[in-house]
Length: 354
Figure 1 (cartoon, one colour):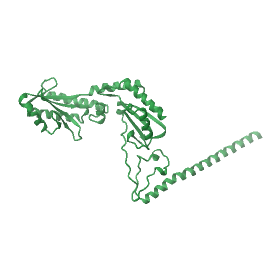
Figure 2 (cartoon, helix red, strand yellow; figure 1 turned 120 degrees about the vertical axis):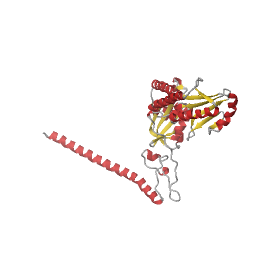
Figure 3 (tube, one colour; figure 1 turned 180 degrees about the vertical axis):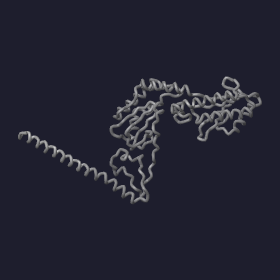
Figure 4 (cartoon, helix red, strand yellow; figure 1 turned 30 degrees about the vertical axis):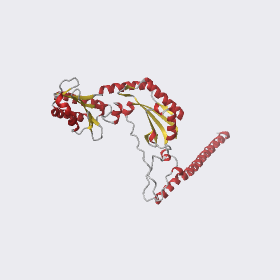
């Protein structure tokens, strides 16, 4: 090995040593600088804990600095009161985690910010675009989703989620309505300087059609009628008879309610026809298999008290065998809904079948 090669090798070793020393120096400087910053809040929290009588729980609803891993700014901290105890802040109720079936029922567009934005500025932008153009908007702050109008103005938001229900009893969302929604989303994305993630309109319309077909298959009103044998004598007695049954509402439209204040089935009188109808809106009822049995028992009791005949919507006599067929239909429809993740009577079922 000649002298030139040895010289180059020596220079290479010296360069490597200089790089290692420089990196160590930078690392020590970084640790020293950030170590002093991270220790300050800890010391302040310890001092605050000694002043107060009890432990201070984190208030994540307004503690935007902790949500995004930043240092605690003095202006954002909650200072202890005169007695040393921090004032109680209102805890926001987060939205439930988005389920697979909700992602099937709704079209979802997600806006992601490169830097967190305040909820107040987002609401102002939504108003500028036109709040009526959006069906539902949710914001992600900290570690949970919240409705946009429920957040304090200074809450920092990292993501926005816009949702559009794809079908209801009115049918699937129309291409024009979907296109208008997508245009509103794109305008909002541009004004907020955000990144956008959303399906194509063709894919959304295909899902809407699929959801509408499913809803049409399981949507049902289970009904039966009581036809008075002696209208002249019985019809004048109907108000007193029905009002004495403990039903909610006022004659001629009454309802049997459950313990949660929700309608199990309706009881509607028609004086002109001399008839009472009992109707259960199947998708809106919790435990429809039990409710339909109770509705049939109610019909039998009324038929006995009013000397009435139980008939179907076509006026044909409906006996125990016919009621069993209806009961089995309810069980089958409930199983179909549950297989898709929609529980009869749940808020999601009431929303879809509205």
